[in-house]
Image 1: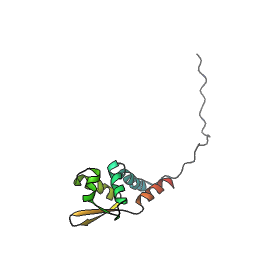
Image 2: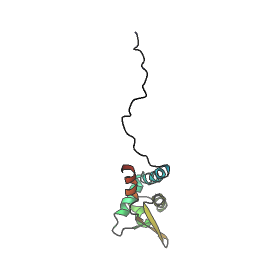
Image 3: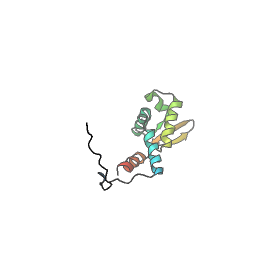
Image 4: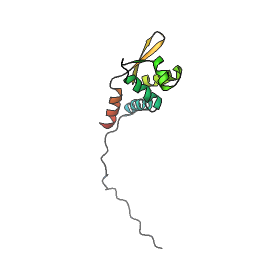
Length: 114
C-alpha cells in the first residue's frame, strides 16, 4: 500500500478563536481559594445555613447538629470559609459567630465570566 505524500503544515493558518485576557496569578490564587472553600459539600451546606439564617449570623454551636459533625470539625470548615473571605467571624465569650460577607462570591464569579 502506498501512503499519501506528507504535506507541510503552513504557519499562515488563522486561529479559530480569539483568546481573551486571563486573570493574573494573584487573582487566580484568590479565586481558587474561594472556589476550593466551596468544593466541599459540608462547607456549601454551612454557607447556606448561615446565609439563610433569620438573624443573618449563626453561632458555631448551632451549626454542628444540621451537618452532623463535631464542633472542632465544624470550626475547621468555618476556618476555611473565613480564610476564603466568604464569612466573617466574631468571638463572643467562648462561642464564635459567623455571618456571610457581602460580595466575595459574586465578585469571584464575575471575575471569571465578565
